[in-house]
Image (cartoon, rainbow, N blue to C red; front, top):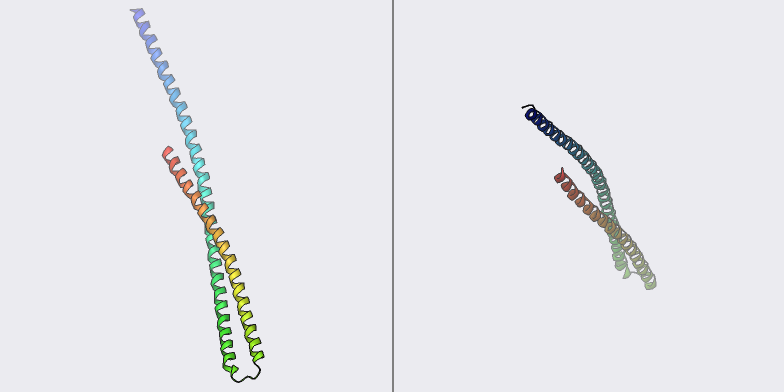
Length: 163
């Protein structure tokens, strides 16, 4: 009977050791999971900061585009006003043409007005092309930022699923 009790005692001790080993394994697994969660949280925080930075950059670029658009509209208005002035002057020249003896003087005036008009139109076109190129670059950059934001959102979704 003592042997039977000793056998039961050894069996109970073995059971306790197995349970203790399982508890130790569970604790190690919990520590590993805790470290993994912390790593994921750090990665999500880094991605969030990157996302916020990119959002600020996009807002800045949009503001820049708005400013360029405003400048373009102002330039257009200037050219339209100058064009109206030139048309009035041209009409005035036409009106006085009948009363002027010196045709060469009128032709010179018309040519000068035409040159002024062409010069202003060329200046406006050059400025408009510059603004257009700058806007294209900004739009391209915004598209790249949007791609990066979409990647961040996908990464965030993956990380949240892993949590």
